[in-house]
Amino acid sequence: MKYAEFNIESNKIEFLNSAFGVESVLLNGKTISKKFSFSGIKHKINLNSNNLILESKYKQFGESEIKLELKNNNKLLEEKIVKVDKKQRFYWLLIGVILVFGIYKLVIESFYLSK
Image (cartoon, rainbow, N blue to C red):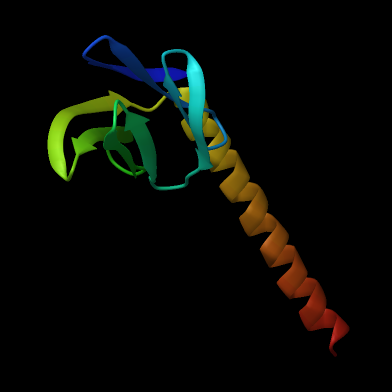
């Protein structure tokens, strides 16, 4: 799902995030960075001999938003805040419930097996 677009000179930088936390950064339609992130991560972008950083910061509780900062040499060029898709929140909640249930079941079973 596309979340944000930045235009630098005549170049288009796009930020996408899947429901399972895989962030992608596209430069003029080509994927240049793809990383898994639970709470945010930095993507390096080489653009016309400039080393840009697109940093994502995910606020999971409260507003549930992603803060995106595009920087050049630690100087903020542009900032965008986008709301997280409700489907994505549901998937993470479901994964959390499954993990908690699985860990609980393992702990209880290992406790009874050790007796």
